[in-house]
Length: 140
Image 1 (tube, rainbow, N blue to C red):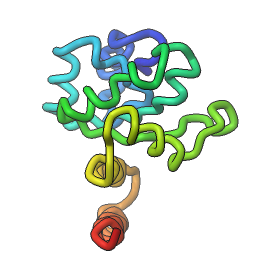
Image 2 (tube, one colour):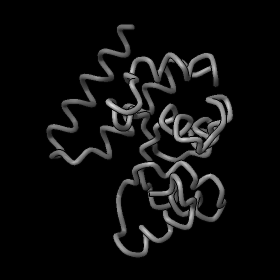
Image 3 (tube, rainbow, N blue to C red):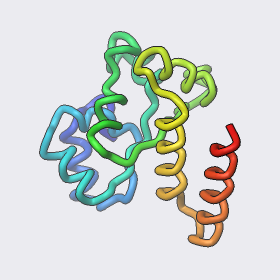
């Protein structure tokens, strides 16, 4: 939702399904009211920058709004989308985010924490994974 059709499809999804997370909601950035709604309601966005460039949503990686979405305070995660189509790993996606937007350990940690908090798993499992993630990041 919200990739090819734009922000109106995110609104449509919200009206029809009231989701807790939205895949490919990258073009939400085009509607400030939508960004505010997503932030206020803590709706998680799954963002796949390389896929968005490969499908011509954005002409080059550096023009992708992932950094603006991140700095707008939205909970988001970085994803690879369909790996057989995009041919990128999550590590490679991170390696692209660093030079393009200056992302480092702090941004990657926040995105991973957002991903875990939005995961469809039980709270005890979620908390164990969050604790393990924080422990691992603090040793880096």
